[in-house]
Image (cartoon, rainbow, N blue to C red; front, side, top):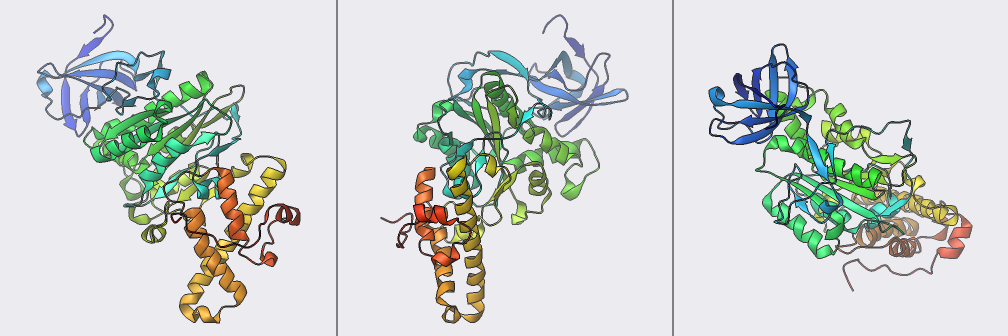
Length: 467
């Protein structure tokens, strides 16, 4: 305790993770505090509300076991600050940035307020440059762009975490060796944490990944700090050190549930599905920290994973996330049941800034044309698949049968790539072989000059997982 630290007694009541106490002169909103229990145990927290003569303190470790008469609150006069450094790459930390991998302490290069803030629109630069994730359905049809925020919508039991880990280890910015990943997981089990660690170590990319892991048995309130700590490190690496950073956040639903728990403890009027009315604003304070800043070479891109309760894309969490972000990747339960890995349903997928990152000249024209043609042909094949259940396949014309077979091959070979990573060139090779199975007259979205240069002779397309 420093000489400027103020010690306050007079705790009045407990409400979940909140401690209500008498207001002391000089206390400020967002101030970091230390809660000293009667037995000498020290817990940390922050001031979340000032109401008349009362102060509400959010205790990160929870209030279980606190003895009100013997509890002392130390006011530090500072907000929560995270010590950041390049040394955090390759390390595993808890939700507040403290090492949990048994390695040496992290020596901070700077102390930065973790609350952060959205990038000033006047200083924001437009996203650009293609980030190759190694996942064909994303790279070709809903491309991730440097400085973009692109969520993954998944459901309970779907391999959303597997896809998040795959992108965290396999993503790269072509021609850039200063591309790193900050991975933040909220409310995960110990088994899931071990799986993430193993995935990172086996990928060979562990030295360029900083991991913040908040476990299910950690305080729920700590989940509100986890993504902010991850983004604070990302901003330091990107905007101060000039690196290009991809931030993977999983699972936003766990973050929102912790926010709802805090809102309930504060006895706030609930909004949709019990979530606080400021859920949209709170999520925006996270996602709008992504982007590029004029005059700086680095960038921060965000890939949040959102579990949709009951697979409901209109649920408040995915609904509000979609309003803030620039597109979405959607996982499908039916594809997963048929063994397609990863089970990405490309029809509802979208990347609103895709055109800014898919190259220039002929490369850009080819990418856009091939993506449009694949989307249109697959959508038509899906329609015919439903029609077949009514009239039978025998009633289809040869042209319609080709589209139906194309849809099946598209799911098996391009979307269902299996566990391996694919380069964009490999993805284009498969796409062109798929298009070669269709009548040339159906390829109306691709200019003739591009067809003449790239379309191979018709061949059969093998399944991705078979030799």
